Image (cartoon, rainbow, N blue to C red; front, top):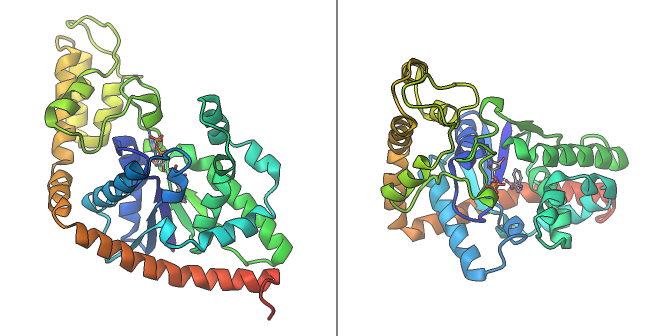
Length: 324
Ligand code: ADP
Ligand code: TRP
């Protein structure tokens, strides 16, 4: 089994990214081959400040390694280190129906939000399909919001294999952990950097993150009364960090009444802070050795390129670009 996922270096990571995509990826690296990359070409659809993009790339690499990506187990690389992905993306685009892309929610949502409807944004799912197919990936750990992009990838595989021969490209499966597929933000909507409702994975200071957690939206149940469990953001977030006993205690305290939301938020914050404490330490260590990050990414790119060339030469032959 080969798992693969990409993360865009398009801003500070939040705990939705961690639980939805990074943690499942880190767990999968123990179970087979793993290819994880920094989707820097994709990030160009939203970040056009060169300095910012370069910084985001470096920070994402550090954060992913700090969270447990093991470069001895997983191939970790930058998407742009393998520009061959564009050759495959072009070939895929010649079999990809327009309607498939026109239906994509992510494209429609971004345009509705005022992001310019450029070709990169429209063709985004085709490049994503190429990312996956270039490495013969079987399993793709992502959050719920990427499900449709995976469906596009699967449709493209069916189409190209139909045109050029069964088995040419590998059919991937999304791996969406439904219980944490949608981590809620501080306002109860899906946590997303575009909604301004995120809890950062690595905040600037303890105080700044605590302030964010204290802003979590709750109902107006008075302090002395029992609090509803259903629909509570605090409960949904606490579940990500707490063990069974801690969770039962929290639920019991909610139901007992007599405790205010401020106390529960503090408990959530403490659990969050402890959970990420070893990762914060690791991040500080990694920041001291930028040469190490470059080395990891260069080594990863070398391995990724080997695999990419195997698939590309298969595709070039099957399509007639190279005569056999
Ligand atoms: P954002 O919505 O903040 O822009 P991205 O689109 O960059 O996040 O998502 C990166 C990865 O993190 C994707 O695999 C996505 O599915 C996952 N992800 C993002 N937000 C959440 C969330 N709230 N819950 C679970 N997974 C998420
Ligand atoms: N579109 C993904 C996101 O926004 C990032 C991504 C790019 C990706 N290529 C990929 C994810 C390939 C999985 C596989 O999160």
